[in-house]
Length: 72
Image 1 (tube, rainbow, N blue to C red):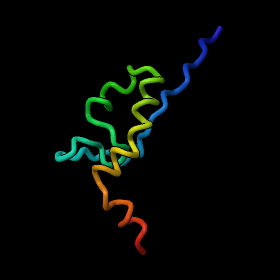
Image 2 (image 1 turned 45 degrees about the vertical axis):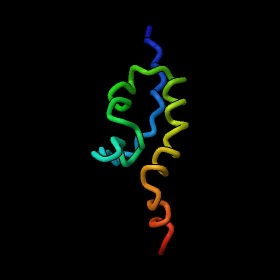
Image 3 (image 1 turned 60 degrees about the vertical axis):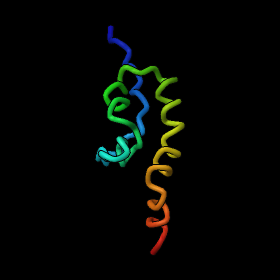
Image 4 (image 1 turned 120 degrees about the vertical axis):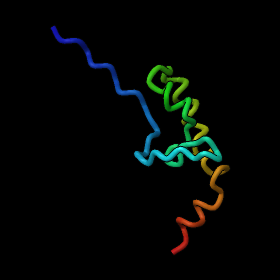
């Protein structure tokens, strides 16, 4: 009898892993080093709560990024 496979933990990882020394955030996903390290041990509810804040974190940390990407 085979064991059921656990669902993969949700993750905001964009594979652009650059930790910004000034903000303490990953420039790709917006998580802190601590959150990245703990990610696999967090409950799905806690991961979802953190992911809900990441867009705001990135916009606050890098306010000019969206404007630079939108310009031709």
